[in-house]
Length: 216
Image (cartoon, rainbow, N blue to C red; front, side, top):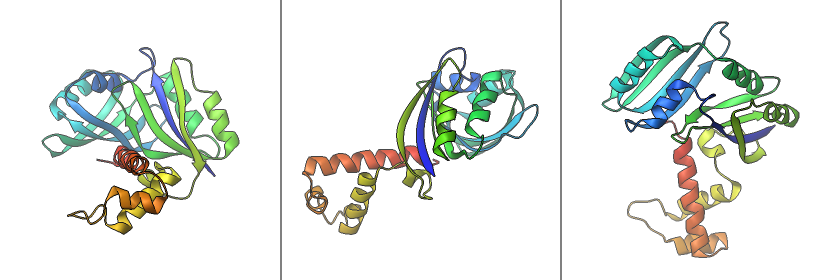
């Protein structure tokens, strides 16, 4: 099976109103869908994990005409989960059909970003992946960030390239992440057979990829 990491960029006509609200507001730091049931006839059910102001978010939910029901659960002052029943528009139905058809499985979390993009990974057969990408509706730009073989890893590990994974493994074995640190980036570079600057870049990008993929 192949795995593909995708970024979809929405325009003003296709973006979901709650995604647009969160993206354009300074009250939120992270917005991720962690679970979804797409089998509804009139609406779909989703669970989101949000870092931001729950009162501001709930007020926006009340005003949107897309949400038929919701339940918001606060975990601390600026972190909450929300269960939502959402009535999809035509563009949403088409996307859901494309990326759940045949062999395709979407790997959570699905990250809704402040630049009106959505980022997620999909696993499936090459023909089904190709067909889904070719069918993305107008008004949504698609970027393929990474293609590889699915190895059963979770989203955080799957977000890494092979070289990034190797850099993290070597750094961990040498004690780079211990407190206090018991090795240097030069030592990591020596094990990897690359320059210290290259090793540092591998580690920086690996840490960024893992943090982006984690459900925080």
